[in-house]
Image 1 (cartoon, rainbow, N blue to C red):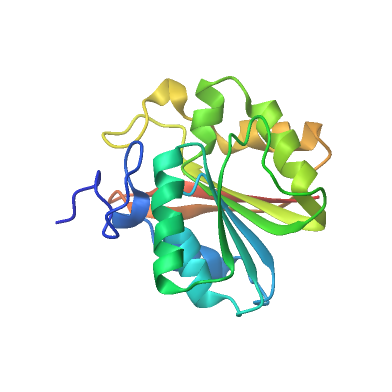
Image 2: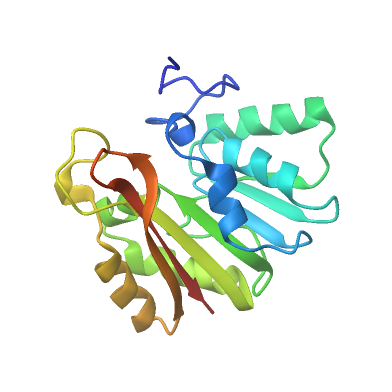
Length: 201
């Protein structure tokens, strides 16, 4: 069994890698991408989601891998350099403050197990506004998070954010609700661990 603290690519990360229990390939496929999008893996951690996006998207797609932890970004940069990958751009940034990407530029932003960190920092509004800033008109933000429930694994209950709260947050910032899937993540026996909620600018 894999060690959750050490991703298969050996990258240094803060916290746990979702690689062992979330099928990022299926999540990305569910977004119905054409292949040539500007895609962002926000809170990329070990970067495995960005690498899967690279496999799924066309050569002319642009993929941003963004994380606040500089060691993760350093490892990601080393990996793309070693593999000669030209269309993955690692960026060290705090999404609640500023991401070094121009306004109205990104087609799709995917955040997997990231939003509860914004909740803990009490900066959900700031994160929403910054992500909205870099999103193209008609672009989408997809948030995959742990359900708001007591569970043995994942963040503690007070840290978790329900899809209802996220829905009201994005509505307040004039983002249009697109879809909600409550049947994603890890199989807990009688239900799945996560939800995926999508909004459009």
